Length: 443
Image (cartoon, rainbow, N blue to C red; front, side):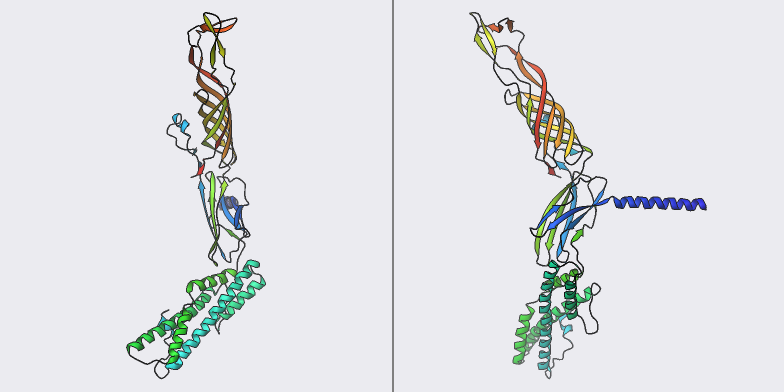
């Protein structure tokens, strides 16, 4: 029994340690909202680790009147393969990573004997509900200004909420939040429904009277016209916004954490953030922010740009030497060649900004039109857009002088009337590349 008990304690301890490690691995990515210029910026700039999970936290906001939407998706950074590399890398297309109206009024007697008083009573009730709704309009707009100026639970905000709740409480029971938020909603909607129901009642009664050719009193027509005008001033959507503000203002914060955590198992975690002022129906900001993975993986990428190499195809001209031969003179030309080329890089990503690896590529010289084949090493710098510095061996087949050319102490020569003899030869040299990858997109 002693051994079994110790074993259970041990397993329980292991589970606690595992759970603690799992929780500690969930980090928070901070994004700050600036209300002055309606902008979002990243506070967390460190590289993400693919084995960790992250929550996203937005600060500088006001949850009393702002709705925040956060959607994050891990994506790879890919770029199309440059056209020249398709011949030496076939099959690869891009970089890869390894209440009923009449029920409300049913209690009112509208028989011919009491109908005048009934109309008056309905109209008086409509006026009372109208006043309550108008007061709510004014008070919630004041509350909206207060929550922008003061922190949550401040006395001035709390007192304003209490004042509003008092005006919507029943005689026998006062309202309080958050417990009575649904009752508050019901009371507000009841006032709107009473006004609309009264309007329907008067319209239906008028239609019935016309059908029965019944004479109506002047005050009925006057009340009907006024109630119809009042009913058009109130809609449910508007006052549900007021109710929502009262409820949210009771407890609001300056930050919001994402409901779910995210794992950055690709190059970049793309976070799309939308902040809406639901009270004024304005979209304050909508922005995509990228959090980059630290890497620690092999990738295949591409770059294009300038390749400097020392493989030069010499050019010659003939100069009269004597009556039977011409001297072959080498043109005075540069000792370097600049090629427009493309490189494929199999590189290891040390961080989101730095990678290094081996490279293979080619370029075409604008000087002699010959292809330079390149192989060496590269350092890649940048996150989405990259600058690549490369160096290594270059090889090309260029034209060189044939062994049929004669040479003496005066130099190279050939008989008069003969063209300079050349042949194609594989020539090795070195290259230095400065290339770019500006076409990477998230996928």
